[in-house]
Length: 345
Image (cartoon, rainbow, N blue to C red):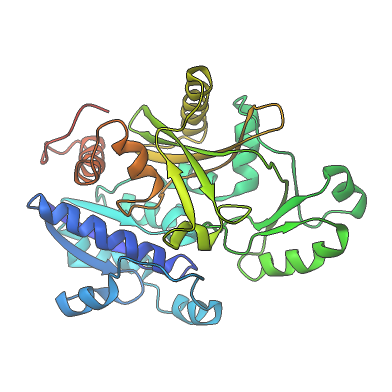
């Protein structure tokens, strides 16, 4: 199978994308597939550039935002559909994060080019990327989610929401630009930090309970996992620094709660019209009930990322997971079966 892997990008999660790409490339090549790597900023990578760029580790902080903004001018955008590496691929594998990869625009380009690609389509991607819109859809589907406001908000509205609260960019992942705010005097600084990454900001009730996550593959909810970060929240440092968090799969939970979380994850996946795979994150409130924080349409894909761990806990190893994502894309496009699949999803 000829796979073109799109990665990189000009978002704060550029390094995260490269780390995932390194392991997806290795996994697919270990199964005998031909993989070409394209950075959406710098174009196709030869063997030397690939070895230099696809580093399987991530720094303790995201890349400099000014440098990323300079990269935006070099983004290939719609020109990606003109690349021979994309047009000639059996399937395009997306290992991207942030607006370009998860916001729906790249998916629309690939749809117009009639190229099979992994993950959700333009609509589902756009709905999930906007945290305010996503939370409204959670509520409409009967999925509990913490109360929230969008900025600007009055001091009275903020006081009614209550402290502590989370201030975060609406369309950025990996907790980049996120702050825990404990009083009204901190709001302005926290909003300013979030606006550094996005022009829309969300203020959300902080839920201090256990942090849980559920992967979805095809139409199946995978194992529930628990995240125990060394910091107060599962922030950028805890996500990508070895030893800064403990991830437990499957989580030690009553079976009724695990089933409830899996049902909610599937409800989110369907309500936002997602496809192929996703990862849904929760926290337990003071009464022990799950509150949905957000959904990721292109979750991290290193072998130790949360979705692969969720899959491994039900018997799907990392190479099989990567092949399954390719196969789901090919099936959707009506192409012939090109890879073996570990189970039916």
